[in-house]
Amino acid sequence: MLKGRSWDDWIAQYAQSHQNPWNRLTHTFGIPMIVVSIALALLALVWPGLWPWAAGLFVLGWALQFIGHAIEGKPPEFFRDWRFLLVGTRWWWAKITGRI
Image: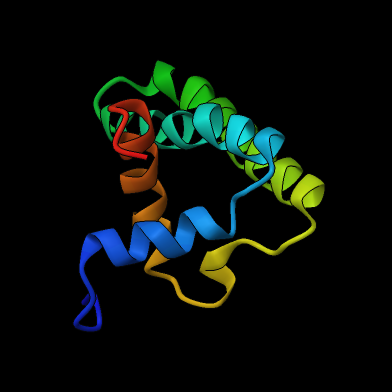
């Protein structure tokens, strides 16, 4: 699945295309919003009242991603390779834990 590359290699490439501080900031908030929205969507299968929260967080999280890329002037990495949808979450975790 990782094309023989380590997670560190993928994260380094992702970080390279996310250099603008505003883009990094939008991703710092947008990525966890998307992750939480997916979890809420799954919970909404049992508690339907969560759908508006899941949808709102999902849309807002993605809006932040695309705003950041508009500022950066580069397309999202996942346009080239879908695996970057997973790498973004790993990049966020590395950023939060001080690894990058």
